[in-house]
Length: 197
Image (tube, rainbow, N blue to C red; front, side, top):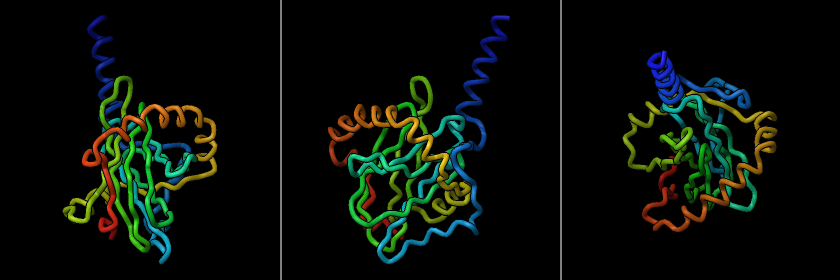
């Protein structure tokens, strides 16, 4: 019986971290034909993609924290992608799971940028980091990531979730941002203006 319980525990952990596509009841699935995210002349778009199924049961929420506000971008589940239409210029982005991590971006108007949401093993559940995709990326690999993910959009329920969890979100920002800021610039993931397509 003891061995059976151990096996069941290991199986559960395996399923939580290496399972299939995830989903969030707070986000809405949309087809590629319904999703039109071309930036206007005075806009920039960041497409957040999570092609990995690792940690599929754990949600990763992304925010624009350029100002004091934790501006919701969306919840990026496994095998999902979320487009963020924003103004050009400098931004600071945050992803949360068990902890928080950050990425800086300097965006040019009329361009689309790409970011990977990368799950990693945490202490109790998955943590996440943001990976800037640079202009010199292998284009076949980029298309593979894009095609592996289905579009999700923010709903009113997403905003309600963010409001309900605002204290936890802010606590993670306050705890982990100083650590990130203390890193040398070379260790901070960054989207550069020329990385846009």
